[in-house]
Image (cartoon, rainbow, N blue to C red; front, side, top):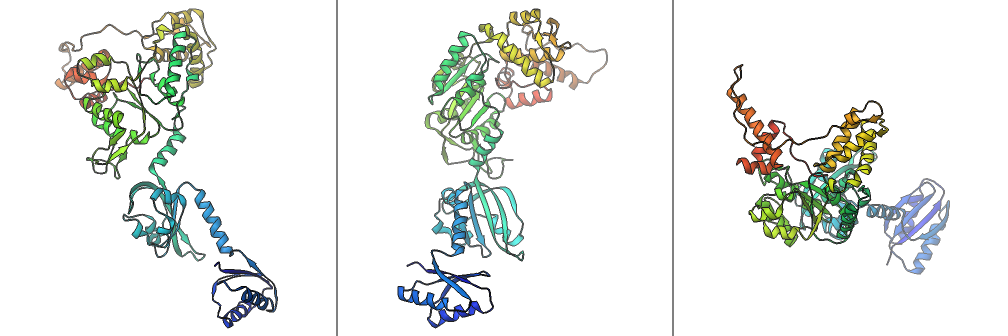
Length: 527
């Protein structure tokens, strides 16, 4: 039976609690709890029979300066505990508290779900009996110092968990530490939160400016593609907007609320790209982060990963990607555990993958896995009717960005833009428009402000050795000049650092290091 709780309204006087205690002692009734306020005394005792209950209330009512004695359903401290529990259980993060003896006193519903324990299993237990690895909340009892956003791996009897945690000491009115409280967030949730706050504006099909029929047809196909989970292979020249379409497909899909993670497969060396995609365990290699690292496949779980320049993947990484597509599982570098991931893959390339398959530079089985739904983005020269709309939009954006007030484009300047071939597509158009707005000095763009890019004819990748200069130079300077020229012209001809590495017989990392040394830009993701 429930305990008997009484509310005694009284006038404040010395000896009231003693009078109440004497009545209870004469009847051998134990006091379970008591709260004393100036005008109210709350009393919790063991349950009594109906007759004894009535008699006790009558006796308490006869105490001098006692007004009324009423039964209540619970004590005030119980109400406060219920309110605190309700507040804690509405918080999505795990909250746990310990007393000065390191005994767990509070454990909310989120902590139950996150750590796979029931409250009944942990409340009253020593924290070191539940958490087998060190947890910083216990240190607060000794140091008194709070901590913020500390990354930890927690080992419990139910396994390992990766968290971000903050903790605070609990002090009494005299400033003495009587316990500590900690908040834990799963690292997966932390990353999703960071993504939701910092993510760039994700594009939608409505933001793709066009009036041409060919672009409208492409968008209609992409809209239908977005509704299912099939792998998409986007084909198109550099600068046509392959990533824009990938983002739009993601935003039109059921995965729109989850992460969209773009990766340029040509911009990173193999080892770094592998760790970015698949993550690694602590101690997997020299320089590995403590606690390891979550890869993009785990980070984008439930969402979409966009693999740009997919043709630049090495054969070894192609094999690992194939396994993700076939089984939906990954294994971190240095790890033994298989991790299931639910990620939609959208890939893009401007390369001839079919030719690469015939030359054994791209796995045939991966090609068929990726090419489930092919999507071709037309080049700008095949949709010239879209040019005026794109030019007008870019004029507005560049004015805003450069803080200029260029009102319009003269007709000869517009004709010059419309007649150009735009081999660099929308990216080239954007560069030309930024250049024109920058050079414009009279609030209008003239033909002279339109400075078009003209790709020079191909030159041999390996130049002749420069003739001896009039002024003596060190051999290293001459060799550096030759190396710079070779790299610059080879990247201009073959497009990507991986192709340059193959042509010159160097490692991909070696090429990237040399390009960095000579400030030769690496090809970036297609917008």
